[in-house]
Image 1: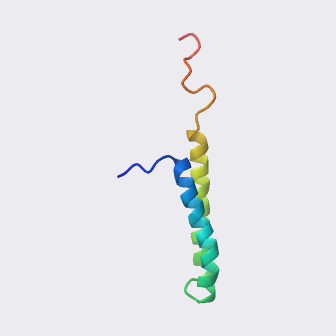
Image 2: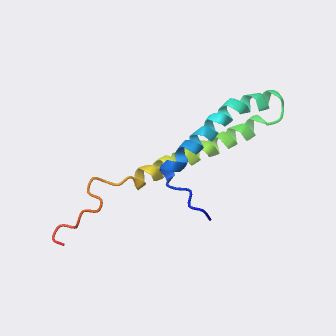
Image 3: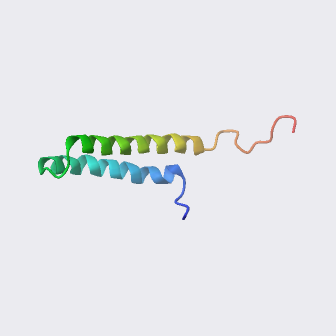
Length: 73
């Protein structure tokens, strides 16, 4: 599988998808093409995915002392 980059690289894509769903789902509800429970579940799943990407991106950020030798080393 191709390396798609860090979580920080993936986060904008996930946020775009979430924004797209929030824009499109109301129309799909009105037209009867989706049910409320389905749109809620799909949106919640993408919100959770964004939260995971944010947490992973924060964990991937190098800290102030990353790469510094241990004291006494």
